[in-house]
Picture 1: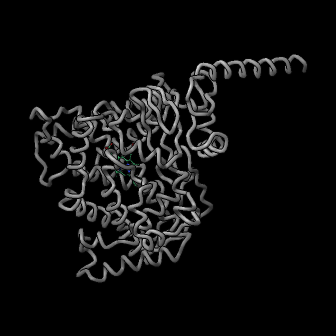
Picture 2 (picture 1 turned 90 degrees about the horizontal axis):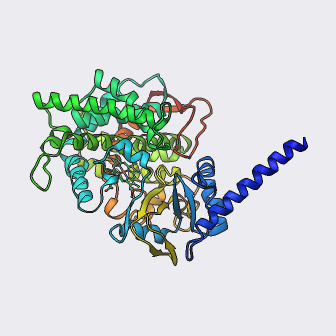
Picture 3 (picture 1 turned 180 degrees about the vertical axis):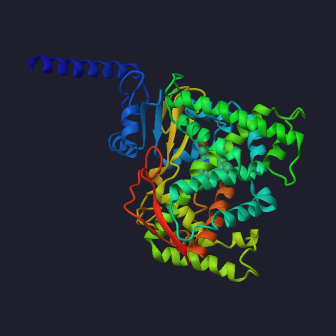
Length: 464
Ligand code: HEM
């Protein structure tokens, strides 16, 4: 027993010594307050285990702007809305995107989160031409409508895991929009590889067999082969309907040279990755909140039935003007994004030592712009923990508020914002006008590292 106690005491003493040594290493004048944990791993384990509670605990001790060491890098965590807004609006003043290496490696070297300056402007322009409002109006809205109409055609009488189904739905919709792929061997081969790649995006970048990172890179290789084959077939046989792949094959860089196949592949992976979890999780959470708030469901259904009543037939697609009238739908989407905090900020890196918020932030440190606490701020959103979509229709200035950051802000404002709103709105249109639903069993939800229902969210669907 005594021997055991000595060993335990020894481990504590050694750990305390390492932490002290690490703290001394970062004892630089002017740094924000905070703790750096153990050498190399820092406070990663506490951060991953406790997530938002880690943020709250450190904020209670050190305020809205504190230092830590997570995910392999010294990091400043900022919960200060003014600082976060400043950084988002001023990327050119010494900031770069600071996303973890694992994410960048899974998305490829041409992905938008690796690009900055003129390269970023070029990639962003390319993506906006593929997924922005103009092409949505001309092409994507109709494709989305056709897709939802048929995807939801046979749900009557079924029990569905809506988490699983919304993920499948978004992936299939993306493949249709990108390359007019609707069924067959491509989605079947693509899906499992893509899920493995997603697991690799939040992982320690250790290229050792068996790790998420290693498996993710292998999945990426397989995805590359699938997309290469799609490109080859498209070059041999043009598509009868225009799609994103057609546009990507025509895009030229600033030297009027066609962009490479590697570049095209990375753009395709980035588009699917950016929309997949964000849109599917938001849609799942909307179904959950609407189920729990019948008045919100009633108002939403009335909005959509009113649009349907103006239509000649049940198959008439929704047009852009009708989509733009869906004000309560938009409010439901924003309220869900706010309350569930599907995304909770962004990451940047400093290019030189700089002064920020009265402190020194050394060159190369990461800054995690953590916005979740802002979404639950009782001054900006009274009764912040209640689902109240009407707050967005009563206060029309809320979307234009200077701290509205649900889709980011500034030069990296979400390039897929309008597409996300269109996809969710069209899904809701068909879902609430065709069906009613009830939840089956207890649904457990977790909020970190991603919002999800670990055991699924089951609903029984029947005709309305
Ligand atoms: C509810 C859905 C969505 C949410 C909440 C969301 C949120 C965000 C946020 C917060 C950012 C800023 C990240 C930063 O500042 O570093 C962002 C960027 C981005 N999003 Fe979205 N997003 C959504 C859907 C989509 C979709 C559907 C696509 C594409 C199909 C997309 C593509 C992008 C791209 C390409 C960027 C990077 C923009 C740039 O760096 O210039 N997003 N998104």
